[in-house]
Length: 515
Image (cartoon, rainbow, N blue to C red; front, side):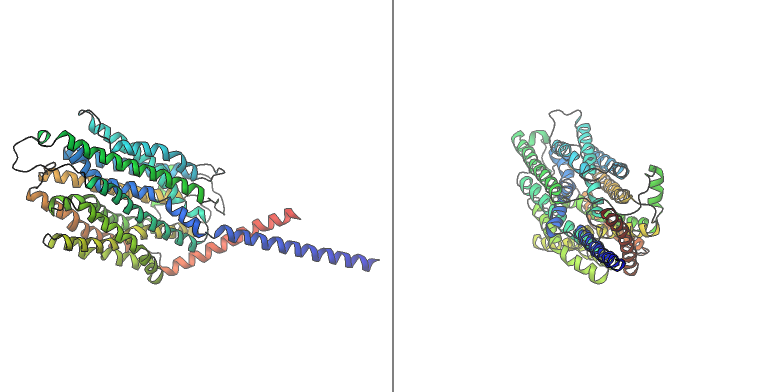
C-alpha cells in the first residue's frame, strides 16, 4: 500500500513538474513576443515621428520668409517672434517631460494619452500660424501667441513620443532597429514638409520689389497677387494638418506601450530631477556635443531658403533645392544605420558631421551655378541624415548607462529626452532670432529682388562659416563622451540579466499562483 502511494506521489510530482515546465515555456514565449517588434509595429511607431518633422521643416525653412515677405513684418519683429516661439518651446520641454514622468499608467499606457489629447489642438494652432489676420496693430502678438501655443501642444506630443522608445520593447537591438525606422520616416517627413510647403507655396510666392522702384511696397504689389500667396500658405498648412492627424491615428492603432519591468521608484521632485539629469556626465557631454552640431544645421536650415533666393538669385528654384537636400537625407539613412553598426556610433557622429563641412564651404565659394548648387545640396543631405539619426540613436545608450549606474532609480526616461529637446530647441530659437536680427542690422529689404552686399555677406556667414565653427566645437566636446561600444555592450548584458531576473521572479509568482 505504501509502495502504491509512493508511486502515485511520484506520478503527481512528475505531472506537476511537466505542468510547471510547460507554463514556464509559455511565459518565456510570451516574454519573447513582448520584447520583439514586428515590421508593422516598427513602421507604425516610425510614422508617429513624421508630424514633428513635417511641421518643423515647414516652419524652419519657410516661417522666416513668410513673416518677412508675406505677413510683411519688419525683420526686427520677425526675429522677436522666432526667438520667443522657440525659447518658449524649449522651456515647455522639461516641464512636459517632468509631468509625463509623473503621469499615472492607464490602459492606453503613460505616453499615449498625451499624444492623443494634444493632437487636435496642435493642428488648429498650427493652421492659424499661417493665417494673416485682417489687422495691422497686433500682428506680432497674433503670431507669438499661436506660435507658442502650437509649440507647447507639439511638445505634449513629441516628448512622450520620444520617450516611447523605452516602452515599446526592452530589447536594445529592437529599440535601435525601431529608431532606424523612425529616423527614416522622420527624414521622409522633412521631404514631405519641404515638398508640400515648397511646391504649393514656391510657385505662388509674392513678387519681389525692384531696388530702383520709387513706389512704396504696398502699392507696388497688387492685393490680388499677395492674397494668392497667402491662400497658398493656408492650403499647404491644411494639407500638413491632415497628415498630422493621420500619423497620430496610425501610431495609436499600431503601437502597444509596455510598462517597464524593474523596481518602481517614487516620483522625484522637479528640481531634484533636473539636478540628477544634468549632473550625469555622459548625458551632459552627449547633449552639449550635439547641441553645437545641431545648432550648426539649424542655422543652415533657417537661412538656406533666404540664401538661395536672395544671395544666389534662385528665387524660383529654392524650394526644389531644399527638396533635393531632404530626398538625399532620406536615401542616406540606411547607409548611416549600417555605418554606426559596423564602426560604432561615436565614429559615425564624427564622419557624418565632418562630411558636411566641405559642402558648406563650397556653396559660398563657388560662383552662382544652379547645377553645382543642386550637386552640393544632394551631398549635404547625406550629412543631414547623420545629424538626424545619431542623437536619437545614442540617447537610449545614455539612459541604459544611467540605469546600470543607478539601478534603484527608474522612470526618468521622459526627463532625459525632454532636456535634450529643450537644449536643441533653445539653440534653434537663438539661431533664428540672432540670424534674423543680423539681417535687420545688415539692411535687409523686405521682398527685395536684390539685397545689399552686407546682407549677402551676412547670409554667407550664417550658412557656412558659423556652422563650420559650431561643428568643430561640438565634435571637440563629443570626443570626451565616455560610452564606447564595449561599455554599451556591457550595459546591455547587465540590463538583460536584470530583466531576466525580474521576469523569472514574475514567472515564478505566476506559476505559484497557478499551482
